[in-house]
Image: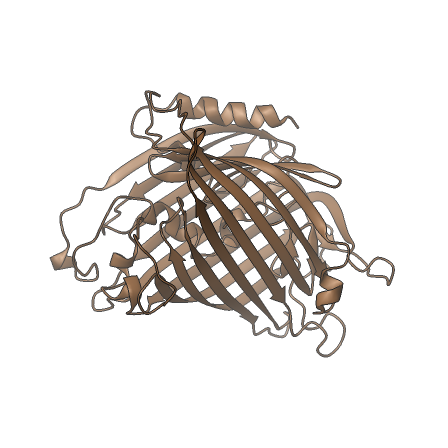
Length: 446
């Protein structure tokens, strides 16, 4: 597969669009990493606090009244935009698709996004998300839902292989016909302090000003309750578990100074996922801790903004060895894994799967004074950003810090990020020890 084919086709399709179209949302799902691993459920795996909020938080809407009271809503204009696109990948061949977004969809802070595509080998992908809706009388709550489905006639998947003492982390790469789906319904309770003191809708301001390191005064603290269901069926692999269904709880303190264009601050997330199981499905539990920090530096003759961004990730499956072998382990597509568009970007999505994982990321992000995109006729490009990044991480069959730090995998790469009509588009190229990947995505990796 040609890297050029992907970028050129997407850029050409964007440039052919009429004015007022948000071309960036074309890339909501990671349809085109360089190994062709296009179906790895990018939208579902982006936690709701990241992917679901981006299109709304990056809009310039500031809600001045309780969005839950329909009668008290300020005047706002609904914005509708759509863009067709063409891509070419190893799995799909040539594919045609269309994406669309509705900003301020019935409420000032709400949005609806959809995407669909169909390829020459009869594969298809679809996604729809309804984001940040408020209900009357529930000032501190925001509700979102998203549904993703794909069918690949020539899909690339990573599945667990037989484990041996000499090769405890092995996975098998397979090419097969398969289908995937994911349904998430998120209820977000914004705690009534910091930027959440005036309600959930008013906490969605893109620029947050000065920050402190006291959650009672700064940032947005939220509790996310998310029932989920994930399915994956791979032809001739009927022995693999194919359903994960349960409840996700997340505590999130987002103390960044802005969304997408972060210069300083931090973000802390703790997530627990539980599948209670049934007669045909394993029960299991996972937890994840993620900490990000951002350090600004003064500009210079080349760059008007410089930021060092750091991310730490630690995860475990405490039920892994409970009972009989594999009885309380999640399916590979729903469990703890590394590789993909956010962590270890030089590897394919889900390439490393096991009980526990650790990962470290560092990015140097700069905004150059030189900005050649101001004069493009079709879209508004307020800024662009260059990045260089390094990552390292590992998975292990036990929650042991020494084992997790043994033979760490690494990636290094370069990235471009564009603010296109208020939404952040990311293009990353990452090199690992044995491979290279290119990702065309929405939102920063952290």
